[in-house]
Length: 104
Image (cartoon, rainbow, N blue to C red; front, side, top):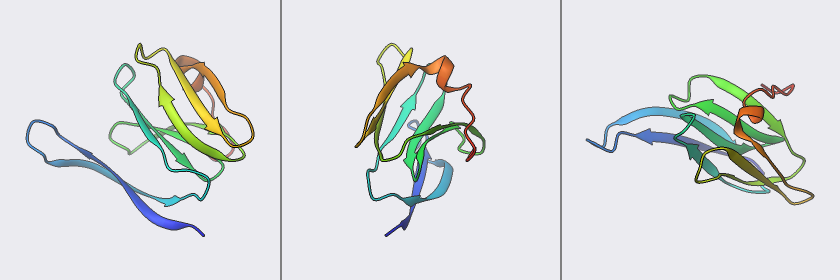
C-alpha cells in the first residue's frame, strides 16, 4: 500500500531545512533527482513523475508513467530519464518542463 513520506531540502552551508513537502510512497519505485541547471526537483509518485521548483512549493510539470520507478537528470542538465517497469523514456528537460498532465 501507499505510505506517507517527506521530501526535504537542506541548505548545505548551514544545514537548515529550507523546504519540505509530503507525498505518498508508491510501490513501484522511490526516486528523487535534482537538476541544478533548471533548479527543479523531480519525484517518482503514483502515476508518474512530478517536477517541482526547488522550494517544493510549485508543481511545474507532471510526466505520466504507468509504473514509474526511477528518475534522473543528465550531468549536462539537458536531458532527463524516467524509468518505468513497462517502458521508460528520455527527453530534453526543456520539453519535460512544458508537459502538464492531468495530475499537475
